[in-house]
Amino acid sequence: MYNHKILILDDEQIVIDAIKKHLKVYGYKIHEAKNGLDGLKLFSEINPILIILDLKMPVMDGIEFLQKINLAPTDPCSVIVLTGHGSDEDMERCFELGVSAFLHKPFNLYELKGLVKNSIALKSVEQDLKKQLQARNKMEEELWKYRYLLEDLVEKRTSQLKETNEKLQVEINERLKAEERLRHSLREKEVLMREIHHRVKNNLQIISSLLDLQTRYIKGKESLEMFKDSQRRLKAMALIHEKLYQSDNMEKIDFAKYVENLLNHLYSASCLNTARVSLKTNIDECYIGVDTAVPCGLIINEIVSNSLKHAFPADAEGSITVELKAEANEIYTLTISDTGIGIPPNIDLKNAETLGLRLVNALALEQLEGSIQCEAGVGTKFKVTFGELKYSKRG
Ligand SMILES: Nc1ncnc2c1ncn2[C@@H]1O[C@H](COP(=O)(O)OP(=O)(O)O)[C@@H](O)[C@H]1O
Ligand SMILES: [Mg+2]
Image (cartoon, rainbow, N blue to C red):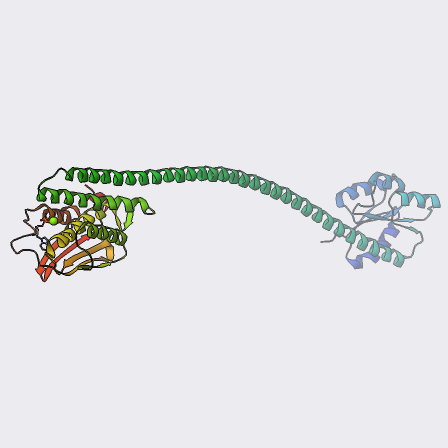
């Protein structure tokens, strides 16, 4: 809402009335006083946008009034002076005191009307601009406040992140060091394990050599055979440890390779050759842990040794077949057969009295926790089914 209050200060009522009459049509609210002193009171009460001021008045004249109100150009009020006796000095003084227009009496009321309209319009625009400027300054101030706040926040967050980052870096370094230590200790353990398997193999070989030395003092053929059987068993076990220290992870061995090596050894230790008794193998590619591989290797050793030793007497010819089928869930079926004379019917695998077959039975049922069948038909056929032993089953 615009302020359209006008204050008229003049000691002549007739002038006031004339002005009022002309200005009323614009809807201005007009207040009046007859001297400067009354005018001062009204001025502070109503805050007019425009003062129409006579200079010569009783009690307090226009100049004094102007001095008292002490208008600054930015104040929301302008002054038009109307005077009958105003000198040039008065005019100069008035302009110094912030007056915006100076009219001599008798004045043209239309000129005054125009001046009043322009002065009020100018002041209104000026006040609007002032308000807008103030609002803008306030907004700018707020913006600066937010900017500082934001900068502060960003700074705090950055330093927090930096701190977290540093902590993470320390943690990463510690983890890297721990990982390196672990890797180092793993390497050490691997070396150690390899060394152990190597030594076990060497020790088994030493025992085998000792037995070999001792055979020279044995007279009976049967005793000699027993020593040779023991040597073969030692060799079957030593081979496992040899394969273990050659393997990548030292937990499992390449069983097909092992069986191939074992059969080669058994053939070369026997007086048979593959020309007379051929060897067929069909071993699925599989990697077997030491706990399963040792009993399994010993079983192969016993059964194949028996085939080599008993199945083909004199110059009999035939073949020996070794098969290992790897099925799902680490279940294996080992089949060893020969086309020889066949196991004598009076020999019962379950109640065998001889060491070789007892060993086969015990290794299959107890060590491997599997099952075993022996078929005598054309030749002999053993079928052993077992699973990979898990750690908890180890004795
Ligand atoms: N594949 C086979 N063919 C013929 N006879 C066999 C075969 N396997 C085992 N036998 C017979 O079973 C017997 C028991 O074998 P085993 O317990 O290994 O004792 P050993 O081999 O020391 O004689 C053998 O003496 C042999 O008569
Ligand atoms: Mg035997």
